Image 1 (spheres, rainbow, N blue to C red):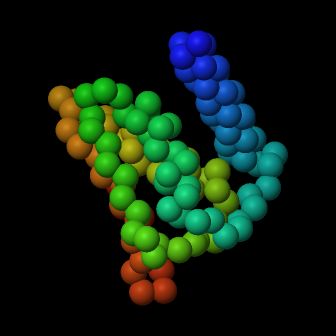
Image 2: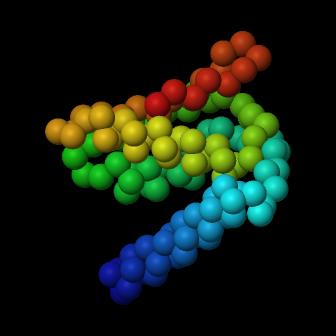
Length: 116
């Protein structure tokens, strides 16, 4: 039962990632409009932590840190996730022997800073 539940969870996550990728490809090809809306940065990072872990692989330690008061940004959520994911993958590729990637989000005055 535990194995089946884990497999079902993995299948659900894979389907969600496939759906996101399709959306990203459509946006890239300009067939889908970008829709900027308020995004809770902490929630976005929390929601994509597992995707980031799977993407950077086992030789890289991943740390995701979002300040409690980080707040929201106005962005297309898919594009923001794609930007963070691409930065994490580039950081992984820059460390062929492994290392640590830290994704940090904090408030900087009236702005939100996201660092990878």
